[in-house]
Image 1 (cartoon, one colour):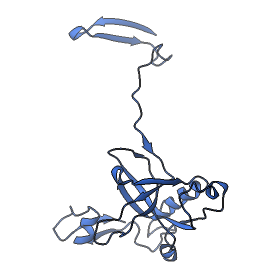
Image 2 (cartoon, one colour; image 1 turned 90 degrees about the vertical axis):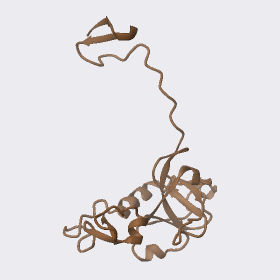
Image 3 (cartoon, helix red, strand yellow; image 1 turned 180 degrees about the vertical axis):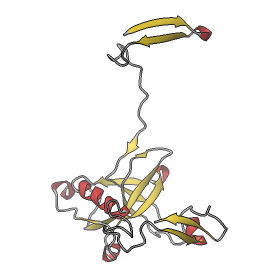
Image 4 (cartoon, helix red, strand yellow; image 1 turned 90 degrees about the horizontal axis):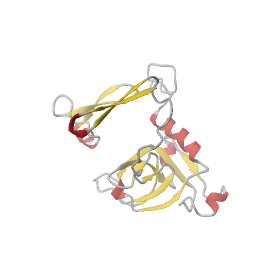
Length: 199
């Protein structure tokens, strides 16, 4: 390729390139900015109690599902509990036994007892709400990803299809009562009695 420098405005030079672009990397690549420190999926964090009226009244461990910057960010977590209540209703979950693998037996998962992790019950949290990191899930991470897919219905189809969601409310557009619309930040629909959401 042929490169020609021409004078530009305010003392800048315009570099015209003819021929194939990116034929070879530059001899001196531009300096890249330092990446923002990030928390990663599989990390187990202790979150504070939920201040909402119907929120969780106790601080508890949650498992991070999405990357989350260490500052000015927001992550999505999976609720964790030693009780199988949501599992009994068919909610997507994995049952983590901290003593089943060598990694868990060394105490690095952050759990001391068999615990249900529920991707069907997701909790958003701001970076400043992450109180302390308790551990990390490694051996069960592939199972957790699959459970996330089940939890949000990926591949299940819709109510009118032939998949697992056949006959359910999935894919329907519904009108929410005012209190639920406000909680889900969906209170911008027509009228003032509620909002719209797609299941």
